[in-house]
Image: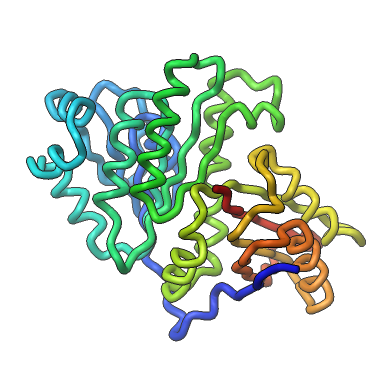
Length: 305
């Protein structure tokens, strides 16, 4: 028996949150390069990152990079370098902030938790979305990423993690460079899907509901035909990132899309999801989208500890 299934998108008044994306380091800047949202790219001058279209850009000077990598967050903040002032100005009025990065390298690992900390306020929601290195990138890089992930989870309201190794289950023969591009596209799906259903009032509810989750993982399924409800849910739960015990999930978000989503179809999709999450408090939104045709789509963000 599930704890609860509660709605999303019922804010009163129905005011959409102001969204901003922040790319940290080369990986994060590449991820937000084609994002439709207002964005901010934070990188080092030496990094080979795509310049996000019409985005503000902060380049960290070499002397500041050394400070970030060798000093505590409190020390860096106390010195109030110009890039921190700009970050605060750029995010001061933003309701929902997504911080994208790849952990394992020096800049992303040291800067991501600091950026999340600088963006977080009592009245907003900061979601860090981070990729973890492939095993082939080496043990040292994975250890750096593991430590950085712990700090990022502590400083963010929510953290979505994407272990790169799991991507090989989707596309096992991809060259490494193409795999990074695929991951960039995958990591931007949750913001796009949530933007269509969230209201500003939802942000506090999500923060409260998922506060006990150390991290979130992403699943996505789409199907058409007479068994589309069953198959879309099955595909979403087949996500390579659901590599933990789902029976212990305490919180999550589900978004369902279809051209015509009647009560019978919605009930079947919901029951199939909750059957796999016996202990979860689930926030659910359903949206009619004429562009879906005969397809039905399910997106899941499920919390682990």
